[in-house]
Length: 228
Image 1 (tube, helix red, strand yellow):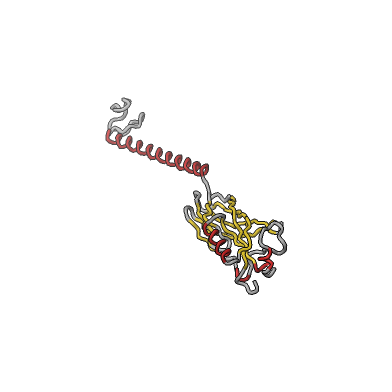
Image 2 (cartoon, helix red, strand yellow):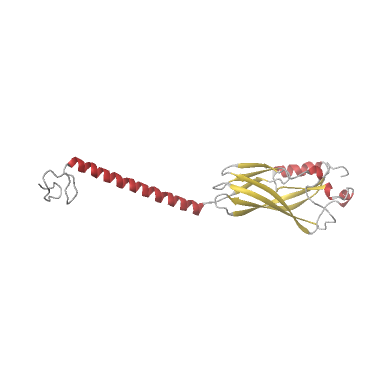
């Protein structure tokens, strides 16, 4: 008896050719062939999926970008932060820098908030207690670089707690409204530029990055406290 595939001599009634390993029942050969093709396709699909996943991961690593948009910042009130990056981030703190009495000063504002990707954080600063006059230490002595009405301020008690410095985003409508509010009530002494540097951590990569914005410091009389 000869194998129908390779024509080798094989024993009578043999099911499998000992040379080419072909089934002598052709239907079984077809099933075996289809099974081998299916296995190959499965391996190929798995390989393509793995390679695609790896390439996508590498692409993400290369193009990954963390970002934060500060819609509005108010040191003594409500601030809006928009996560415009590719992943979740953590806002650690902001360092506010300004200058009075020819001295560079700073205030550390602890925020410690997570923002998920695509979310906006409405943040209320609860560290400020204006009734105790601890907003900031301002006008401890004569400030040579300030231009304001000496007669107006000389009539007020020379006590640090009688003055606030309200830091807000520059040229924002709420900043303009706040300035007007205190000015209309004859409480605004002057304004002073400042800046805030925010420290942000990527929750995916663990890397820290900074974001700096300009601020307007509105120095006003603390009319809440008695004697001010």
